[in-house]
Amino acid sequence: MLFLIFLMPFLNFLLLFFFGQFISYYGAVFIVVFFLLISLSIAFYFLIVLVQLNCIFIIKFPIQFFFFSNILNWSFIFDSLTFIMLILVLIVSLIVHIYSSEYMEFDIHFIRFLSLLSLFTFFMFFLVTSTNFIQLFFGWEGVGLCSYLLVNFWFTRIQANKSSFKAMLVNRFGDISLLFLICLLYFFFQTTDFIIIFSLIKYYFNYSFIIFGLNIYINNIIVILLIIAATGKSAQLFLHTWLPDAMEGPTPVSALIHAATMVTAGIFLIIRFSFLIEYSFIGLLIILILGVLTSFFSGLFALVQFDLKKIIAYSTCSQLGFMMIACGLSRYDIALFHLFNHGFFKALLFLSSGSIIHALNDEQDIRKMGCLIFFLPFTYLCFFLGTFALIGFPFLTGFFSKEAILTVFFFKKDIYLYILYFLTIISVMFTSIYSFRLLLYVFFGSIKGNFIIYKFINEYFYTSIFFSLGVLLFTSIFFGFIFKDLFIGFGSNIFNNIIFFFLTNLYFFNEF
Image (cartoon, rainbow, N blue to C red):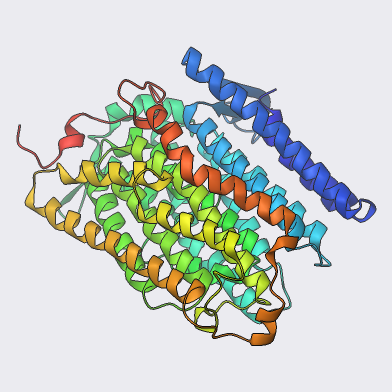
């Protein structure tokens, strides 16, 4: 039954891709939604079982990757980390599919669009359920391929072609780094299986070699390669340039990439390999500094943007930086909590912006908007609450995880960490400034756009869009409160043997 969770999206893809021409519009929507609901129901059921029994499910198939290898078999792991990622991806993907049924209704390639969305979901499932690096790499490349195909969905647009090529090329840096990492791990451990490597790393982390008089530890090299891979996929500073340009794809694609699939893969990689990272103090410091700089500069870039979707895209970079900060502080549970919360309110913001763009005949320049609060009241409510969840307004979803990160950071006692903490607080301030700036430009003030377009705006015909925004509105308000005890509650043991940290790393730079 567990295998059905990610078999259903793949079945969606096969049916729509090969038989889509024989399936009607309503038939395609029904098939996609029905199969994803089955996957979501199974995932929720087994998460409850896992929490109650505190166990791990592993499915193994006697099928080898390569004929020369006796240890690289297809196998899938379902632990608490996997189920949380599956539920996030499933909910957001289901909502995006429902939203797309109305948003992309008149596109002649609608069936192809739905099939690629399902394939995107499948590859993300493949990535998070992997038990070895070879299998993970297939999923890793699969989400990159699907992002390329979906960003370039409107392939007759030159800018979409350029953006998709840019996303693919920039991500090559991270992919090559991951390949080097796989080769290095196989050279030392003679396996790519996660469990075996995690068990043996404590015997290898002190191994080193000397180059030009420098003593270089093997584990530091492993962790640095891991960080580069995560930096490319999660659009951290220096490799972040592809993410704003990826907004050339349809808005539902932007929501799926930013909320649940592509960019979350890098953070998931860091969390999954906490067993390796915790043995590298340099690696933790690099992750922390990278996260602080990413959140700071992404917020700074968002302040001067006028494209509606690009502002939200830089906001995603900034929030991913906060997740990296939590990982650098050895609080992977809080990073996962923020990743989970962020997926819902960021999907809400993107789909709300899609409703705005749809109503204004594909206008994305916020300088040509204004006064939309009277024309799109429900969209305004969703965008308003999504924005407040983003800035961490008390008791909304974003508050519980964002404040946890800042609180953990605040109690570090070293002066250098106080400097980084100060930059992080400025980043939080930037988030509030560009978020309120966006609200003021779009929903308040005078009408700056075409009066003829404003005359025919009516949001009450969009039933699927309304339903999608309503579900995400509920999650953005309540999910942080509902799940906070599960993730970071006192005595919660959901991540036992799944996430690893040294107690001393929680207080690094402190004096004992």
